[in-house]
Image (cartoon, rainbow, N blue to C red; front, side):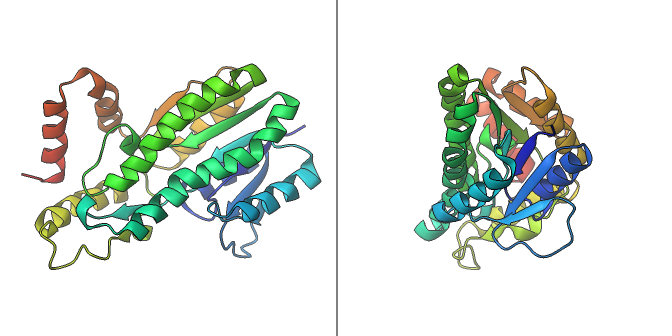
Length: 268
């Protein structure tokens, strides 16, 4: 029987690419979005707001009513807020964490009892290269992804006795709609003391994203994790230089990694 896969945030970007790839690879795929459009997708699209528990429960119940199980959960839903740490409002900070961290927690908690009951399953959590190193003017995005890292490490240990595997995916820059959908902090305007540095860094960020890798690298990785009997816990994917700095960061002095990142983003 084809494995049943739930992919959050599947209306665009990496989520949509993953759902498409898995469907054409023979999986039974359910994607989710807050406001899915009737776009004639070959796989199933459900309404789900990851920050709303009832919305999640309704979507999961729909899948279980039809399929009886969920074999794989891909926690992909996410968003980004750009701006200086000082200038982001409490509402903007909460929104960042509501989607990237608490949303992931909400969906995981709703799916887990069903995986535990059958003593099998895979949970694939999307972190980021920015979950391994703090990125300037994406501080709360990085913080939310650092939270995903710690959560996933603890989760993997807790679920080991139940036969449920956890993997983390750390993408670098890919050609998706993430650049266009980034929210700019409302206070990051002409009066901001950070404006000159923010503008420089944002130009680099957008250049890196728009010139990023093909999303098929990520879709093939997700397929590999699902098919693997013993998948790796952490899975870096992206440009060679981004994967390299993420791998060697723990071995380098903080002063050096800080200089490398400041130089890259034009913060001098």
